[in-house]
Image 1: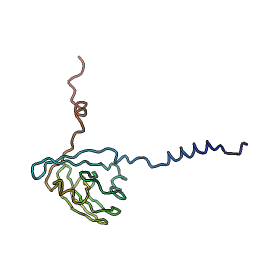
Image 2: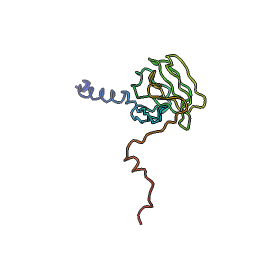
Image 3: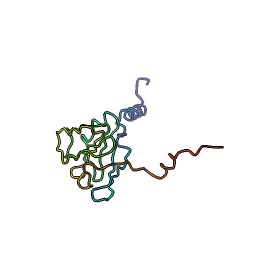
Image 4: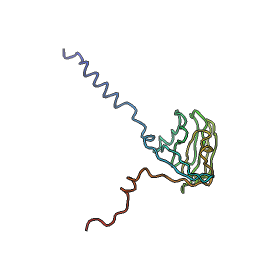
Length: 163
């Protein structure tokens, strides 16, 4: 009887191996942030971005993924050049400087292309036509929007502590 495998043990081992070998959720796309800007008409625009952190996330970008939804984009930083090999649809590419000013907007870049933005610190990848729809153009200043009032309260400067 000793050589006969326990079916419950095999199931448990397979489950554990499956859990350990499974792909973890993509942490690069887990946290979303909002970018805010003042459009050409004076109205305030907002784009929800998914930051691509780490070398692999930046290299992969939107390869094998659907294009971002309207009002969303992929923020790749640091980045000054983008390739669209393996991307399914055309993209709008927004090159942003280190001081968060839009340097250049490349519209409807088809798959299998390379675009370079000299001096850019980050690139915002949007679905084709989205940059025009939300009013992004060269010269606009972008800024990160705070998540909530609780965030501001927690990070308020200290008043000196106990006395």
